Length: 145
Image (cartoon, rainbow, N blue to C red; front, side):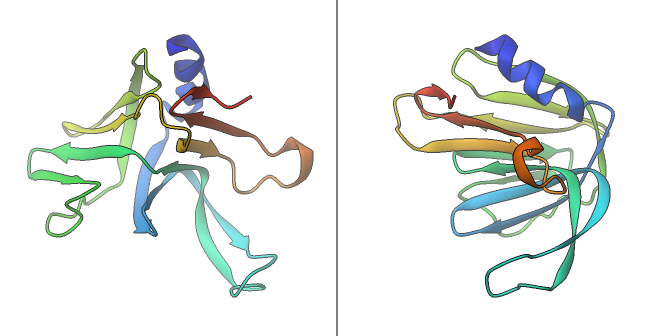
């Protein structure tokens, strides 16, 4: 599983993590080229917003840290990471979690809750619609296939 996670996240290396938000128990990290996206349904239908070439949605334990401090899934107040940060490398563990090494001594750590039936994290390409849209989904039971 480690190799599959690293292969899925490999396209992020060399790109920038430039924004992150948090809502309803999920952290959303925007990575890569900035793109305009127009919502096709829901309460924001027809409204545009800026998204990344890739989006990383995290619903498990995570920590973004650097020389100035850290922010975690349960401590979202206080220190805010001033990006963008270049993605230097990604190293997966045997449970589906990973360490994303960023420039300027920053890092994003994601820890999967093994055994959980729920989605832990997802990498997607928001700008692609239809069957070509790719999602890599990690649950507590492994990669969703």
